Image (cartoon, rainbow, N blue to C red):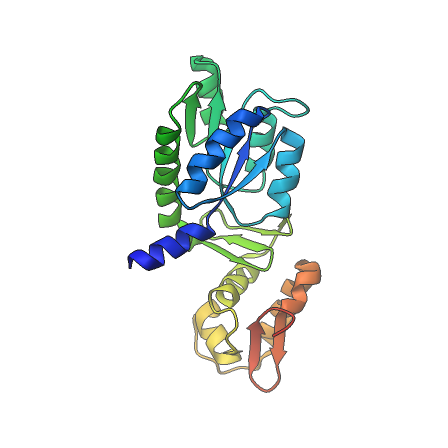
Length: 234
C-alpha cells in the first residue's frame, strides 16, 4: 500500500509561480524532497502558458505581486476553466487581500515570510482533500470532465454538451479502452433495455464527436458491436 502511495506521489505535479528566484528555489527544494514534480514560472503570463500546456497540474502555488500579470489575474483565469487547488502567497497580511483571495476561489492563503515545512504540510492537506473528490473528475488525452460541475474542457477550451451527450462521454471515459456494445450504452445512459434500433445512440455519438472537434476521433466505432474511447494509436 505504501509503495503505491509513493508511486502516486511521484506523479503529482505542482506549479510554483513567483518572480523571486530564491523563493521559487526554496519552495521547489522542499516540495521535491517530499516527492512532488515541480514546475516553475517567474510571472503570470509564463504561469498561464505552463498551466495550459500541462493539463495534469494538481496544485498551483501562486504569488500575488508579480510583473506582467499579477496573482489575482492568474487566479481568475485559472478559475474560468479549472477547479485545481490554489495556494496564494503574499507579503501582505491584509484581511481584505485574504477575503479577495477566497472570493476568487483560493483554497489556502499563506503570508510571507512562512515556514517551507508548513507550506508543504498545507499543500499535502489540500491534495488529500482534492484527491478525495477526484472520482468526480475524469481525464483522458486533453479531455477533462467534471461531473460535479457538469463541465467538459478539451485542450483548455470549454465545450458545451447536452445532458445525454455529457452522460455518454462520462460513460466512455469511465470505460476508456473498453469496447462497449450499444446495449450496454443504452442501459447505462438511457436506463432502459435495448429493444429498438441503434439510431438513438449513433445520432448522439455523431453529435458528440462533432462537438469534441479533433478529439472526436478518439471515439472509435467497433463495427457490429458499438463504440470504444481510445487513443489514436490503439
